[in-house]
Length: 267
Image (cartoon, rainbow, N blue to C red):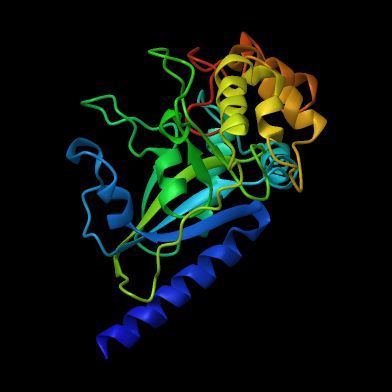
């Protein structure tokens, strides 16, 4: 029957995809695109049938050593784009075996300059990580001062990143995929205030990532990399021996500078 075929196809897609990404140490959360669209205004919705299968890809702390540094050692980094972004794209493209629409956390729509997808909203509706915002704090003390929200993972705390949204075009799922709420791992008002203040005002000290005890943190080398301003990261990679200096400059130009606050959900 069509329902049975859909279930089998979905299971094969997810099993294959998770296995292919295991070396990247990524978390994948299955969901329907309609769950995402239901919480957003029309201008930010994804143009797909509400039952279309979608997957949110997260990178866990050991991605740096298991995927990024080997990617650099092989000399796969080319051009002027960010090395982490290149590694994520290379890994995901290598795992895709059918027609999939991929949106990365750093991509913008050309006309509106809005994000191609809202990474933290996607992680929340997929049940992967709780997106804590001002609205989650009763009688918050900030008045009109805007506080950006941040996702917290139930196992990794803030030591993870939301990397991509994959939409499996033509694969529709129904009642066999049940939406689950993300674990509320920061339940108290006081802890939520602390989290949002640490993230917005002191995010460079990494403290907000430890709002809950994580099972794993970034290595010191990974912290050094993400603590370095983007314009200086090529020089750091050269110092580590992962980029060779070429006549007239480095093989990788510094990315454009912007706000360093990791609004897409961590570094």
